[in-house]
Length: 407
Image 1 (cartoon, rainbow, N blue to C red):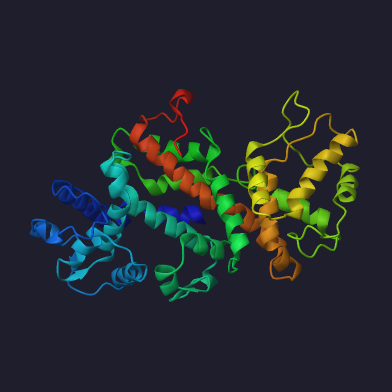
Image 2: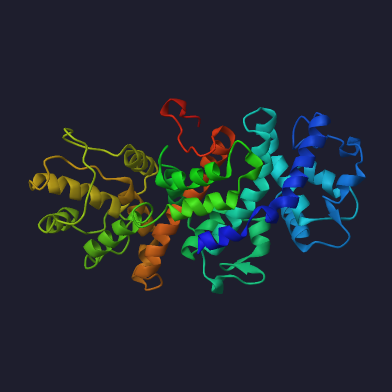
């Protein structure tokens, strides 16, 4: 479904916004603009160019443009490029406002040569694609003329963060502070799993097929379709397997609040019950290590410990790997892997709605898979951009020697 939506958002859908972004970069580079948010910069100093005016303004009001401008004003956002578009007379178009926002975001990294011009000019297209995929991830009944997933469009434009919107789209619930933090943590964990990920191969393969040596030919929407066709039950769907496992283990435990350390559930007994029938659930084992850890899981556990937040499902996984070893079922203490962390965090957020009957097991399955797709969409966009700038036609390889940590 998401791939079908992405396939429609082709080059023509972002063509005008990309042209406008390119024109803004050219004009303001010539004017030596120091900062995209410099309120003292005189936009009137940009020489008029009648041939380009049609890129930015139209003869009639554009409701989308006006809504975006109102949103920027409500957020006290400043932008030289937005001021320029508004100074031209006539009515700013939605493509022009999108271009102005894109140029504002890209200007600093572009001037510092952290990104290329082709990367900056792709920002409007990426923006459209991200919005399209988040929108397509929810059912038609949650799309209304003035609301999305129950959130008024004005609130989306003027108040909400994208994290808020994605959370509500994913779960259909208003986020509590602790749950929103857990969601942000999941997004950060799932952005990428390193060079060579299957999802990244699909995205980079699409770049390579179009030809990064002629980067303007690369179709970003096709790259996201490649990412989506390379995500599935094994790569992306493991989170639900963890949730299904936890649901089965805790089904009759009488657990009320998974965040309460005094929950009254005997985790050791629960773990030993499963150990006796252990046959089907797999954990990664690192050869010759008596106790094994997934560093990502360790990071998350320590992060939530510092915040004083308890998660019974996460603790259960640790009790389980210890019980498997003590019962002689495993010759090592298995690691609690990242799929278990995904399951534990997501089920903690949804345990109460699930117990109340507001969230079905099928809905949990969809949420567990979509929580993988949201951040990996962003991670694959980075892979695509990297390959557009550094790749070769018909080649998707990135030598390990060229990979480095930059954040």
